Length: 121
Image (cartoon, rainbow, N blue to C red; front, side):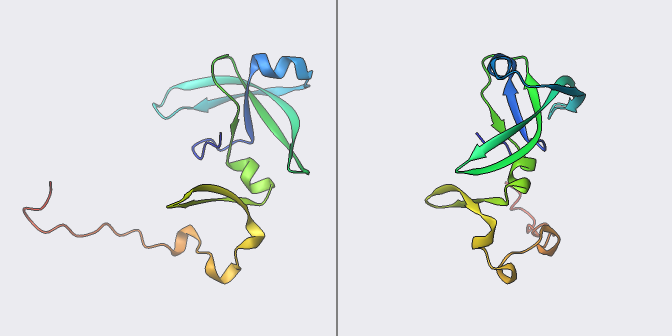
């Protein structure tokens, strides 16, 4: 699963990571959406996705019922983009998008629409 709210590379349940004998890199603390702090162990590892290998820090999750989560750092390193459309969500190679057609977030207007009085529902 890809989690666009997770800035890291990969989050892996501890029970899935232990058999891989990954080397401990360090620790970190993440701030969750509710503002709480969550201390985590970090290991270094690699992902082979369709023959392309990328490496990064893997966050170990103590909750055994959670599944692996790919984060935004994985997308950046692998030069992939998520495309959301009427037919679904697709993981696509960044090179398939001509640079002149891709808008940076800073190019997208951020003004809120004006709501006429009485139409606030």
